Amino acid sequence: MGANDLTESSIPTARTRSASPYGAVLSSESTVDRFSLHLVAQPYWRFPHALWFWAMGLGAGTFMVRHVFSVRDAGTVLGLPLLDVLGLVLVGIGGLILILDLGRPERVLKALKRPDRSWIARGAIADFVFLIVGAVYVLPGWVPSLPWTDAPFLEAELLAQVMIAIAFLAAALIIAYPGMVLYESLSIRLWHSALVPAQFIAHALSSSIGLTLLVLVAGDRLGDYRSPLAIGFLVTLVATLGITHMYLIDRSHEHGPAARAGVERLVRGKMAVHFWVSVVLGFAIPMVLTLVALASSDSAGPLLAIGGVLCVVGSLQFRYAQLCSGIKVSPLG
Image (cartoon, rainbow, N blue to C red; front, side, top):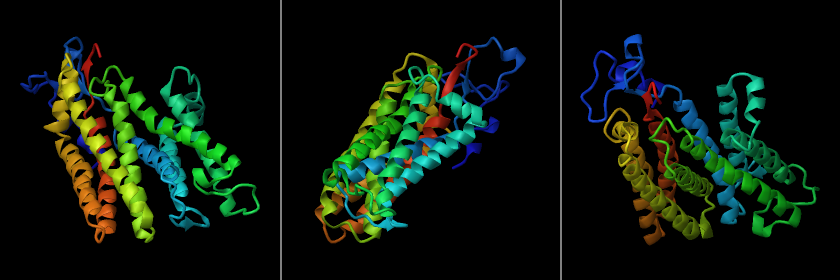
């Protein structure tokens, strides 16, 4: 899986236009093509952006899962609750990728402007709120004298519950805003679907439950959390597969050629291997493993852990395939 999958050699050039029912897909434009209506693969959103979106959703979702399912003891790292630390670190990694992508410090500050218009600005603000409030919330692991504990929401003191609620709302925005960024990219018709934000939410929740299951099984702490987490995992996996199916139908029936060409590239073209591996190994097989785990308590732990790993990796691979399948109409697009 790498950024080189979307190169000039992977799609027809101006001199070798394909006889596709969706029109020729060009990797670049030349002077003679300037006023020809053709399709161009977007060159900007690649693997680093897929990693950014994936890390943000996985980190924010892991924090939410811990408090929704009241996971009290998943282990610690440096005296701090492991799941919360994982959530903070993953969101921090996503934020670091965003900063590196913007390039200069003044661009980082500019990204925070106009949250009334920009989903990037809203997401960046949510990142900062989540990281700051989340870091303060877990401090009792290092400073036990603080007037709150790092217990999950339903067992926490009022002050801790306020911090958890703020971090929870920020985490929800972190999960949703990348999908809104893609949805508002009007020139990339493959992404301009209301089902894209829904996809991001479903992917984040399923992979976050998968990561939580992996952590609990690895630490031999699954215990009473097995059934509720397994049921939650199953529900989110079914939702993910269902939303993906509806999304493909929706984009295949788009009137313009760019969306259909994007679907073609995603399911049968250059990105097809990444797409189908992510759907089958990342979501369908974990769903089957979860059903078996619910029916057989003896082997539940290993099956859920394997399903969790596959889902976490599959979610990243799907994000990469979807980004690299974005195609626009040029020069009008």
